[in-house]
Structure formats: structure tokens, C-alpha cells
Amino acid sequence: MAGRPLTQKQLRVRREELEAERAQLLAQVRELDAEADVNNWREGGFDDDPADAGSASFERETAQSLSNHARRLLTEIDDALRRIEAGTYGVCERCGEMIEPERLEAIPYTTMCLECKRREETGR
Ligand SMILES: [Zn+2]
Image (cartoon, rainbow, N blue to C red; front, side):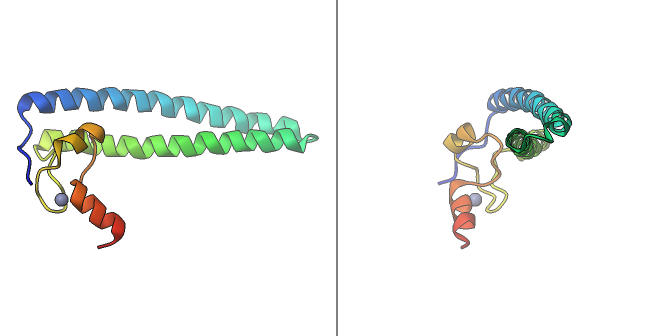
């Protein structure tokens, strides 16, 4: 069940969405990195209180892992924006069919159609 290629208008809307999300993620990464730094710096002051030191380092790790996650998403969004430029956006990179519009709606930076994604996840 191949969908239709996206129209120019749909692509423009999608690009605006992706760019908005990208800006949001960038701000998030900056914030989380600052948080991780602040905690790193603070940690030195908790030498005589292991509980506080533990929670500070837990917070730092949480901030770092959230930041890493946001960075990965950023890469995927950048890729999606490049695909829009290249005119290959919305095409499954595995089977070459159009990705389901509902799927693109839900995950605008996805590179695979539902079936290929499912196959990849089940390893078949
Ligand atoms: Zn596919």
C-alpha cells in the first residue's frame, strides 16, 4: 500500500515543524548540558555527605542521558531536513516505498515505513 509522494505544501509544513522541534531540542540540550556542568561543579562540595553527592551525580547522569537522547533526535531531525532538501523525504530507505502519512505525522523524522521498521525490530 504505497502512499502518494508529499506535495510541496506538505513538505513545507513538515519542514517548519521539524525546524521548530529542532530549535526546541537545541535549547533543551543547552539547558541540560548546563545542568550537568553545574552539578559536576557542585559535587566537590559534598565530600562529607555521601547522600547529597550521590543525588547530585544521579541528577548529572540523568541530565546527561537526556541530553544525549536529545542530541540523537537532533541528528535524526537534521537528516530529515536534508532529505526534504534532497527530495527524498517520506521515502522508506529500505524498500523505497512512500512511508505511511500517519507514520510521518507521528514521527516526522522516521526513515522507514511501518513494515520495514517492524521487520528490523523483529530481526527479519
Ligand atoms: Zn519500507
